[in-house]
Image (cartoon, rainbow, N blue to C red):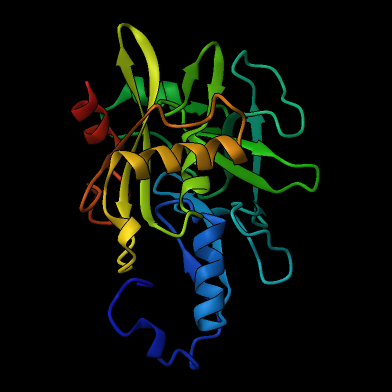
Length: 248
């Protein structure tokens, strides 16, 4: 919507609040929307299985880039990869509980057993929780990458790249090189007329350095491929599996 022709001239004065769903909302895009329209976006996470958004930012308790805190009537918790508890800012699997949760998957017994643990529903998402109780998305459980023995969240790299003035959209996936996991970025460039906007090896190197300067040294894309658009579902979710398949 920010990239649509004439967006800057649109009158949204009748809108009080905005909501975001389907994909996590990067803080950079949140800020661009705020700067352009003066409107606040409330980002949260929900699912068909829970029937409702169960964790969200609110007008009075908001942190751009996060999924907020548990919605009244719901509980959320993080469970470590070993099944134990997690510390502040440590990634874990997100579980949710509430009266609107599913009873089972129709004719999918194994899926039901994997997802339902008593009253708790395993969302399949990995999150961290900061000291103030806000939840931060790290990626789907099957999107997390282990690079050099260390867990890497694709979302951290994506959120960093989206802050680059020449990047409109980006998706990070793992690829294999000689049996070793490597990070690959698929980048859609912004529609600026600047000459440096053209896809090139020089621009790819600049984006790699951008990440190295802002993240841990191992959190940068080893490969950068420029695309005209990213594959998405009808609801706007990036189909990372298609990008992974294309990288093999």
